[in-house]
Amino acid sequence: MTGATTYLPAAALLGFALIGGCGHNMEERAATGAATGLVVGGPVGAAVGAAAGAAVNEAEEADDNR
Image: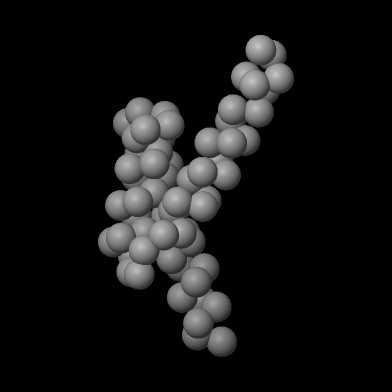
């Protein structure tokens, strides 16, 4: 049981990164990140998930502009 508790934060962050990347534009990525964060961590998780979705969008736009 302790092993599962140890890896839970890492799994949640991985979920933010994977789901936050879904979508075609900034709004969709922020919304999917927020929805995932809400499920995983409540209101604070929603804010973190939205930020993760926005960060994924900015990184992808920077990559596209090269």
